[in-house]
Length: 186
Image (cartoon, rainbow, N blue to C red; front, side, top):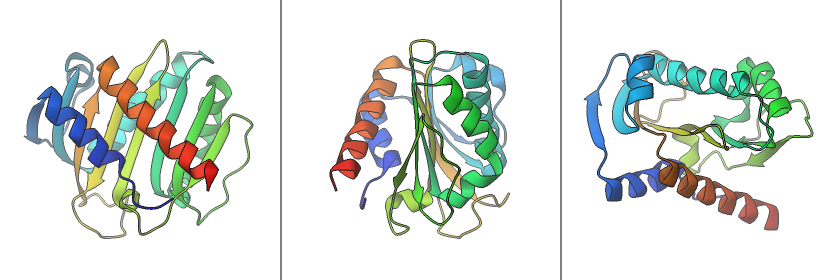
C-alpha cells in the first residue's frame, strides 16, 4: 500500500471541525485527555507514548468483542516491545488491524490482521491508535516532525491529534477500512 496518511486525513477532518490547537505541550494529564473531546498539539515522544498507553489500557479494561482497533507503526518491528499487549487487545476485540512496513514477523492471532505498508509511505513517519467500538471511540494520530529513524527517541517531536468525537472517530475508521479494502484487493 502506497501513499496514504492517516494524519493527513485526520487533519482534513479536524480543520472542518475547528478543534483547539494546544501548541507544544510537555505533558498531558489523564484529566486533560478525558475532558477535552478533541484537540491538536505538538509533543515529545514520551507524551505520545503515555496517551497511547491510556487508550490501550482502556481497551484492556473494557472487554467488548464488538470493536475494531486500528494501530499504525512505521515498521512492524516497532510493535515488538508491545506485542503482548496487542495480542491481549486482540483477544478482547472483534478485530485489530496493524499497519506497518514488514520488517518483523509478529506472532499470528485470529483477531489480528497485518496491513503491510511501504517504508516510503507517509505512514513511515506516523503513529496512530484508533478505536471504534460501542464502549470506546477514540483516535490518537501523530506524525513526526522530522525524518529521523529514532521512533522512540525522547528528542523526537510529534504533531498530534486526539479526538473522542464519535463523528470524527467514525470518519477516520471508515478511512482505515477503505485502506484495508484497498490492501486486500491488491
